[in-house]
Image (tube, rainbow over all chains, first blue to last red; front, side, top):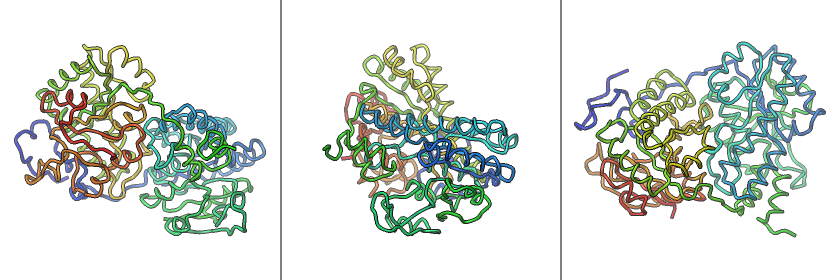
Length: 279
Length: 272
């Protein structure tokens, strides 16, 4: 690394550590640019699978059983980080918390707990295969060793924002949830794939449950196109699309119907069985 | 039939719609806002601006904080500073992602909290990590102050910036979000300048002080360099409790005290 120029004033020199960013606010866009480098993929073999709370886990044995069997079968081919959503219990705890006047940061922690509980359920079903539930801090610091010891691990889809959750633009619902949490960790590790298992085939032009009409299936779409369509409902959180636009590695995600046997495994093999959203 | 925004309609939307549903988000806006620690203030002590300067800067600030806590409840957050800048530049040059930079940067704010904690220990002030924030009310009622590391706990889940790899949400955002989530009465950023300038006053002699500005005005100005993290401004736009912050010069004795008393002694940035 090149040595930075000497400090301009006498008062600064004493306790600085020389670096390319020394004495910067880190907020001047021109000054921070010189340190930009291509970002490496830490775990290029990682596959992230998201199991929706409401769409998969809340459906109980009928849905979870086959999904777990499928994950068990596909583990030999792919190393998996399985992330779970919170489902209906999060809606209940949000409802109570909102009624009590609690802030978004507290609500985020409460909802996250439910996603964690669903993770414990899925991990327990796969325990005999050597799969464990890992806390956020282990995912952030020891994922490599765990996925070297086991072909798959389970964690909480919610990111560890908790009290530090952003207030949302409108209202008080925590904006970083399972879908965006999973995307953030997938991109940070430079994962090979991110597959979202839901209870619909993918993205449709309209939601028949809400709007009626005849929905059209969208099999492949860019983030910009999808944002331009301004659809009333999407099977993934809108924030994922915003994050994709800035992502360093994960340039596409696939949303598949996890209730259709074989879909998750096919998507992990790179087959196109749902909606692919690309940056 | 319950009208929009009523508890009943919010409850049914919560059960039926996706959490990103526009009607649901709008209905949640009408929920009440309960301030958890309304008597506390968050005071952020800059890393590069104060703590890196050693005792000439830090001792007087500690004395002032000890005096302040006789009459105010204060949560004291810490910044990173020159070591964070060093580790960011090493990690970025190695091609490591934003999440790794966030983790290693957070440790620097932690060291600063530890050092400040040693200086304030004899006054009963503890250092509290975010995982132990449940005990903050006790610390505040018993000794009226607690120190916390300012970096938010986003770790590998930190959002990536539009350009480069520097973590966009650092200690300014972390300290501010603590003030906002607890519904604190004020948020003071203690730095080594009199407030916000039109440019960085350390490198640009033509920079002039901006004593008061709104968040929208500041975003519109699109200054090349600013004294607070830019994403803080977006967070403030969405605030439900802390709609104004003040940046004061901690190298000038008495300004933190006066800012907490509601005086305008630095730059006030507010949402309106």
